[in-house]
Length: 152
Image 1 (tube, rainbow, N blue to C red):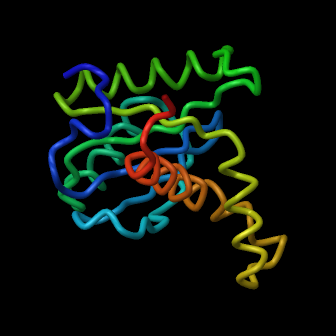
Image 2 (image 1 turned 120 degrees about the vertical axis):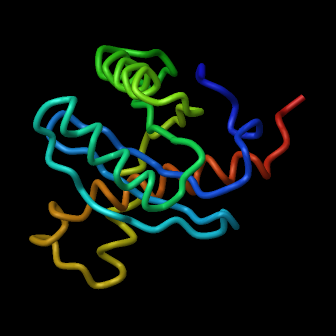
């Protein structure tokens, strides 16, 4: 299944990913698609075990698609990190015939960090949870984009 617009995904829960070079933040949102939650921060090893863990969570959550954070440059261009994320998405789609949507993830880590600090998480504890919370921000941003009509 190719990359597709989020509004064409089937109804049901979604998994969100915030892929980094060393970790992949994973979040989920239920079928109502109201409130995403951080699930875990996966320490990257190699593609095969990383994909196995992603799909284990995908199956546990009965997800119907993936929203993957795409690290665009501030001028909207795609650099090497974005190309790497797109490759991850393509490789995941080769394993499973699932819908994938790439969501602009600029400032998601900053937004997640700000929210965690406001909620009382200590600075020293951020590293272990920030990526999963950034994935939740990415999911929320994607869902919110469905509510906003396109500019004409």
